[in-house]
Image (tube, rainbow, N blue to C red):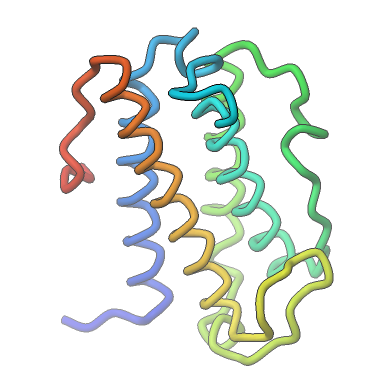
Length: 161
């Protein structure tokens, strides 16, 4: 059975998102919003907002041709509630799931000039989405470190169920 690049990427992204959410749920609400291993680092909640923001930026750009980056600090300056954070993540993912079918594989594979708000290279948009996924994986790894520093066992890194 073969699948398209688009289908393969979606499944990979979904599996990774499930694991990222599992990591987030290991924190207490207060730890999620406030805990950092050192003062110069952001709480995991801020990283999750960045993940959602980057996803929204690329998907909205691809679907609606609106390439507007709004930093999460501007959109959610006072996030203090884990439930609100999970709602933002769910809303972003629901938007992506709703419009994903309208984004063609050809659109994902066709070379484009990088949007002005993105410091990345000119490339096919699938490369930009891969960057967003790799950014999520990077921040999830930071979440693992935070959990370990707090004495909390993180989920197994391979368990994306």
